[in-house]
Image (cartoon, rainbow, N blue to C red; front, top):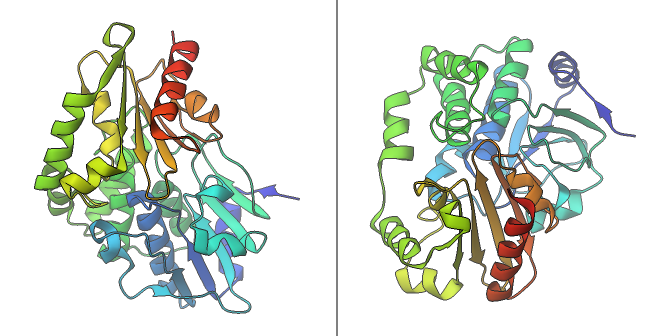
Length: 318
C-alpha cells in the first residue's frame, strides 16, 4: 500500500539506504533532468552510490546536467527513485519494465497517479526541483555550484523564469539559495530564456499563421503535423516548451497545442491563466498536470484530435 512521506521522512529514508538509481520522465524537461541530477549529486556528496538511469530522450539543451551521472541499467539491490513523474505512462518506454520496482516517487503534480510504495508529493511546490532542494537540506547536503545549477534549471524552467502563477515565495527563496551556492544565474537565464534558434523562430512564425482562435480570442488551439516539423527542420530543443507560445497571445486565457509524433500519436499540451484549469482539459484525454499546465496523449489522427480538444475547451471553460 502506498504511503505518503513528508520532506523529513523522505530525507530519513534516503539516508538509511544506498545504491540509488534515479529515473526521469519521457520527453524530458528542465525539471525532471534538473531534479534527477541534483538528487544524484546530493546523494554522492554524502558518500552514497547514486546514478541517473540513462534517458535517451534527453536533448542537448539539458544533457549537460546528466554528464558523468548516468548508467545504462539498474543493478540488483538498487533503490529506484523517480523525479517529476506524475504517472506510470510518463516513464519512457525503456523504463516501463521497472514499474512495480520503483520504491519512491518525488513529484509536485496535483493531478497524478500513484505507482510507487512511497511518495513525496507537494502540489503547492512550483517544481520538483524545489522539493529535491528541501530534501537535500534536510539530509545535511552542502550545496555546491553543480547541485545549485541543477535545481535552478528545474525551478526556473517550470515557472517560465518565475513568470507563471505557480511561482511562490518559496520558489524565489530556492532560486536565491541557488545563486548563493554558486549557480550561474545570468548565464543560465540567457541560454534558457533569452536565446532562440532560427528553427524555433520559424516554428513560432508557423504557429502565428495557423493558430485557431475560439470564443472571441480567449482560447487558442494549434495543431502541428509531423510533416511541418520535418519541413522546417526543427529539433526537439527547438520545440522545447513551444506549447507556451500560443498562450502569450493577448487575450488568450487557455491554449492547447497538439504535436503529431512519428508514429501518429498526438501529444496534447495545455496552458492556462488563473481561473482556467488546464488539468481538467487534459484529464478528458487521460492526462493530467496542474491547473496552469497539463498534458495528455491522444490516439487519434491529428485533425480529429484537434476537433476533440476544441470541443473539450468549449464544453469545460467559461
